[in-house]
Length: 344
Image (tube, rainbow, N blue to C red; front, top):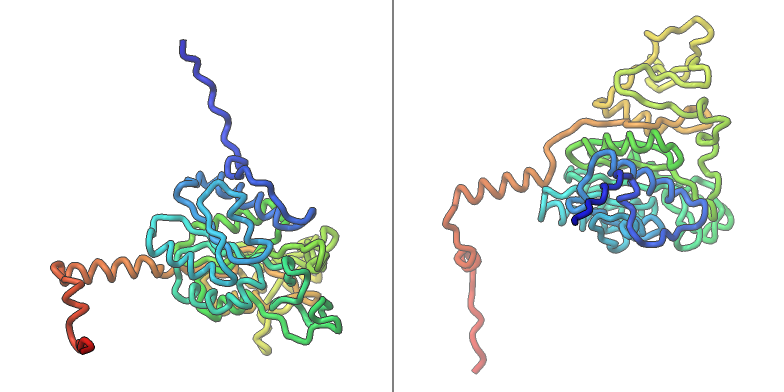
């Protein structure tokens, strides 16, 4: 007699591989992995149609811990390899995993070009403002004064803003979240997945060993409500534990400023409403930072345009239609060719 076993209830753990997860205890990567697995599960992602591509660094171990396809590639080149995968098979769902050092230092050029080309990829940039894998050197996002093995007297370099770089390069989607925001982060990831084109999500994460607490000024529970601006498209930019502060554009300086709603001198009509299609506003929000201004979290910019791989496919189809009988061998020997005479 055949006995039919009941199917087990699906879970986000179905996206966890059999590999031992090996990061430092307390690392923010664990929380990000959980959020990604949850997102894949809730989107009913097909593992056989999904690819994760990583570069070098602590975050680069990510593909080993998922039941999807994966490539652990070379330093800074994950966007280039992901572009090749997407061009070869546009039906695949391709995610790129990179750290702030991997993406913005040696990989900065590759990141810029994958964004300006608008290849349909989800690019997750883990930002802990430090090089963790190579033992705590300062990174492109480290703030001035950061003391590390490579800058014992304090870093003199001005930090690079991932958001300002992405938007300046022509990115059509830029979002932000925090590793520990387990309700917020998956929603931002879903928005990135829904976007057709290059979608960059910067995730602020804690490196408990080499840069512990670097984002406490806006992520600590005691101050989060007053230091975070959670963005919603079309909604007024209001924040604060009592929801009593908002952002408006100063008509003289043309800069964002905080106004109090509790004083009675300002009402909701004076407060800016978020518009995810406004690139100028997104650039201003991306460069806001504490302690004077809140840190903007959520989808800062989402304005789709035709993706690169779709345009390439259309161009190839047009070329084939225009010359259906083209002979590649003949094309190679057409035009300016010459022969090298044999010796003797």
